[in-house]
Length: 322
Ligand code: UDP
Image 1 (cartoon, rainbow, N blue to C red):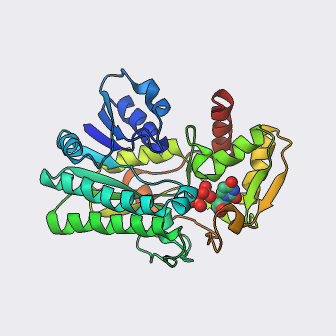
Image 2 (cartoon, rainbow, N blue to C red):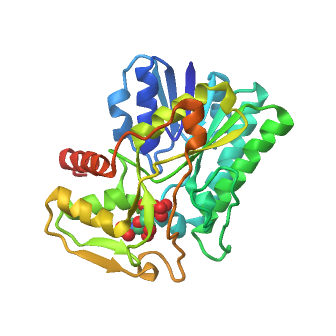
């Protein structure tokens, strides 16, 4: 199959491109390098079946041509990271909403399948654990920057499903939960690369809030395998799938684990949310997915423990300290 991967030079996109090439699929990447990096796809250059365009998805003639030439679009191009979102809400909303709208509009002309990467963030403040795809989305008020991300991705989901219902476009939605692995940068605020970099540099490991909040971290390789499976499974069309781990860990435990596994002497320092993000910042105390739907349909089962995942991230930063 020929895939178009938007945001293919990003952390998840580059792993996805790699996995598709391993399967001998053809891969075309479009990425404007706003948060992605050439370094992520350097090793794929020259591989049979791989092409890339450093351009924005807002270049509609190019996007239309690339969509036409593909069998399936995996749409990953989006604003990433809570820090970036809080700092640049306009960019977040425009990129997420208008970008997805463009991709769907190009895809509908020749009914190309679109797999939309969405996020666990859409569950917002829901307390119905574990989160099921059919559950309510509980999003906070518009004056708090963080919710623009959840809201814009939720709108993307509505739009994708509307294209499916009204125009027969084959769409699949994957809600990604805290995905971690090599090539994820700490630059946009994600906790795992941040902690590992801080520990390796002997800097304080910054735990925001009490540190009692929990997340379930999944390795990018497990997520990518499921994305490939969902993109090829006809029964996935028109549906939403949670992709994540169910192994819950508190952020304080994560900090201690990183400290132990790096052998770092860094102190673990608590930082109030107001200082870390912005005044009145709202964090989710828990976030746990129900992954039975993806398990039943494509056999999704995370294989790596939090220790394996952290060791892999440590290995990455040790060989590539940038
Ligand atoms: N966090 C932290 N220190 C950091 C970065 C993040 O304590 O340096 C916390 C953050 O407040 C949240 C959790 O780690 O509770 C996960 O944050 P991340 O941005 O990785 O993902 P989120 O789950 O918020 O989308």
